[in-house]
Amino acid sequence: LVLVAWVFLLVACTQNNSPNEVQVSRESPKIKVTTTVNMVSDLIRQIGAEHVEVVEIMGPGVDPHLYKASANDVTKLQEADAIFYVGLLLEGKMEEVLDKLKAGGKPVYAVTENIDANRLLKPDEFEGHFDPHIWFEVLLWKETIDAVVSSLGKLDPANKVDYEANGRTAKAKMDELQQWAEAKVAEIPLEKRILVTSHDAYNYFGRAYGFKVVALQGISTVSEAGLADRTKLVDFLKSQKVKAIFVETTVNPEAIKAIALDAGVTVGGELFSDAMGERGQMEGELDLGTYEGMIRHNISIIVKALR
Image (cartoon, rainbow, N blue to C red; front, side):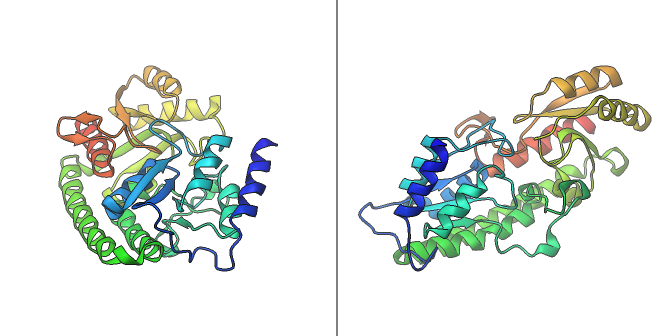
């Protein structure tokens, strides 16, 4: 009830005749952007650079499929000049709040809004919806950059040229990351590219890099896997002679650890799935709180365990 009251208050306070075309009042030298997940935060920081101040709702280790907005979160949304989120129902329990804010005139942008639907996966078990985990296909995540550049340019026309330049730089970095990923994955023979994880977040990764992806849970973590699912996965691991399986930072690892024990396989490591690491959390030269750091960490862990 408290959350509903907050939402109605926000809608009332943000009514505007031209939703999502609002230019920011530059009382502050920076645009105040609220983001949902840290993959989006990283995009905004790369493209907005010194012109934006990012406030993040879901940090490291947080599962966006299950997350419910608190009153404090709604305050962050209210105080933002603009809101950016993934979309495609990733932030399932928050999207009603975001839709109400958008309808009320708050600049609210899904970074996936311009991606060609033909590029998106729609697994049967996701009830007719698209798989939202597009960041694991680097060249597909690259396609979100133009939406961010365009949106920031509308909010802050004075710095539009900077956003466009930063967008070009971000695209170049993702091209380099893609080349590295392809070369690294090539160290694993095709027949050994079987990726088994807690939930079905890696379909785009599998498509991009030639992996058969198998998960204990579906695309959303809302429902838990039953005994039959666990038995089926154990049988699969034994029949395919899979060497290692992986836990995720946003999913309880106990089920996967139990399956590894039953199947006689090792836990190859912990992967980032629906959230990155903490900003400044270093692994060698990698910052695990960045998109590049997350991708390089995941692929390095997978290759080391399966090679």
